[in-house]
Image 1: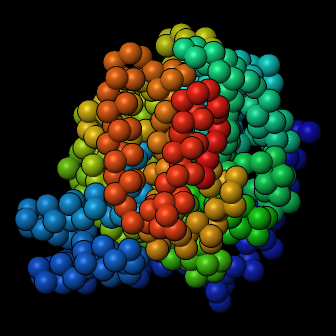
Image 2: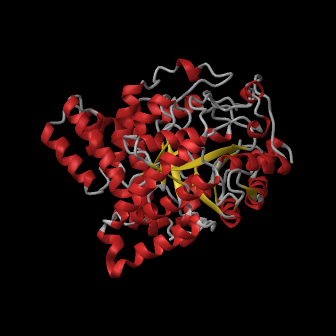
Length: 500
């Protein structure tokens, strides 16, 4: 099929129009700017009341979030930061979930001003992975210890939903012997970052067994959106992208993920856009976003905007926006990626993040080829943290945190409104703590360096002690705790992929 003909059939207007209210979408630029203007000088008592609300695991309103965004008092920022970590511990406990990105194609029909994949970027070396190459990439990722992938695709007819389904099936088919223990291992969950699709195409992704479907609006500010996404391109259609996750919910994908590319417009406005998007999903479907991502604009080949934007976010403001998002949206997962350098990533993790990637390579075919110069010609942006998974797990252990590779929720039916209800009542995190320990034990035995294993075992001992001392796990004569310990001992003896 010719590219131009394919483009004509991608957007189905009626699949958007039914969500509009009186012909308008849910992002009201004037209302968000008014909220920022009217909440510029919040008093201490108001801020402390908002913090207390967040600590009750209640989502904040637009005005409450705007007040937090305008805090200038260092003492109050300290209280906000402490609350952000406390909320994370209350909802998700003391763990960080790991994943790896797998970039399958950089062919793209769009021309986004900030992206290395943009169609007019002649510096980009274009490539789409074959199924055999996807399998080789997956083997490399497995050999590093990962259990979940986020698969990334450019928007192009050669990487349409049928290609996505084929590559997802290929990933699930791969099995490897772990390098240390020799135990059989595989990818347990594939999530997808891809362009907006029709409901019919999204159903195909659901049938392929994906976990979370991730679409970032990039910027919620309509004028900026038009500026950085040319109107003649597919991505130039603001509402087709804005309602991508509505269509996903209709297609049966009940774990969806939102995000903003911070640096395209005023970061305070973008945070309010995220809060408005989460509220819309919650009101419409009873399910907010499963995760929220906070990527910052980093240099991309062929993109002047990526280094010269007037809205680039400095480190201090970045820490503020992450903390505010954690308070405003206390129950979704919060993802910090390898775009960030190790020093800032360490600080951000302490502000309530729950997931991150590691051993990250974002060139097309970059894992199997291990050629940095070649990879740079097929990357979407510049990464700041190229450390191995083992290095980052060791660092987290030094910080007293446990690494998790848990995918139990997807396979136990704890998705959509089920998991959201459990997160809001601070129950899901308790099961996640158990499964985090089980998967951490797997990692230490199957992949870890001697140094990481020695330190990790101390962290596991600490975690088991905490579990044993929590009433939740010891009810009914310790039924949950006893089941957990039975599974833990089985894993130590060589069993794998056991969860609660």
